[in-house]
Length: 349
Ligand SMILES: [Zn+2]
Image (cartoon, rainbow, N blue to C red; front, side):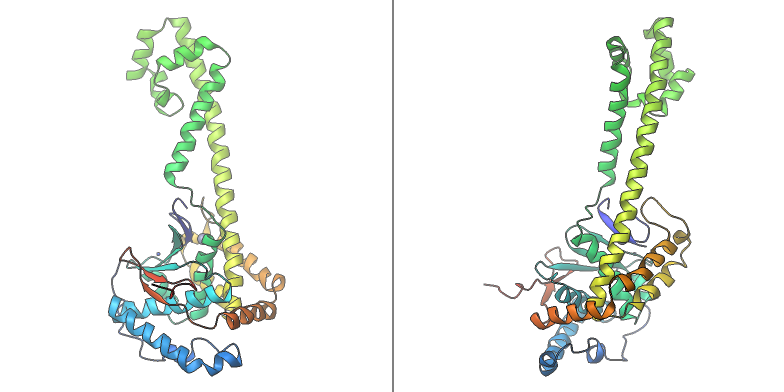
């Protein structure tokens, strides 16, 4: 990701997403605390009042930290993240949540355990906790499955390496060629700049001045060969890059789906989410980073038979029974995001 994994198109790896408050004033109805999570066991039901009090305190804290409207978004996200974390044993390390005040329909995973959501996406699925849980699960999965973001910088480094390999391959045919090619700017040998050079531009003039006609022809032929080899290597890299990104997206959909169902959210939430995504013009073509939205929906539909809902729900109930206490929270040390603590979170000196 690039440093980020986006849900939809993207930068860095994920769904398609500063802090401009949403236009509407507080969601006064219904009270999210009252019905957010169905008690998963009698034991939890007995302590539901205490849990609700904890959640209400969290809501007040987030409103104080982020303002009423944005605070509500953080609170809703906190509820989803902490529930998914406990229901899937993903509470061994803290998570971070950030709401980005831009109207993009996207979300992404970046840095370490940071989940970022754009206002636009939150607005489009406002009030639909199941769809939100699908987004959260997808982004969490990018982290848990170690879809290590391959940065643009890293890609450039690989391209440069491929360029050098192309030069080496051609030069291996004749050591003198290496000297001649080295006399040129190797940095431009395999790029479009060479076209200008061969065509007689500024660099072409240098070539003319440096080499005798026979040698020059040989160098130009070598340059053409380098370009050819480099283009093949580059195409192969782009193809592998795309396949890897697509594999990661399908995998994040698959794991994210299981995470949200285990936490008790409705599987249909993922279909609702994709009904939003499929309205984006970017969803109609497979990009380097994301498969076609329709292909993702097809894959999602097959998950319900592959992973029976009742089985996932029971697994989640068992995990929640073992981890009944809501995870604690606080402002991250980056000063910009909300930290959802790990299960060790409250063990402070
Ligand atoms: Zn993604």
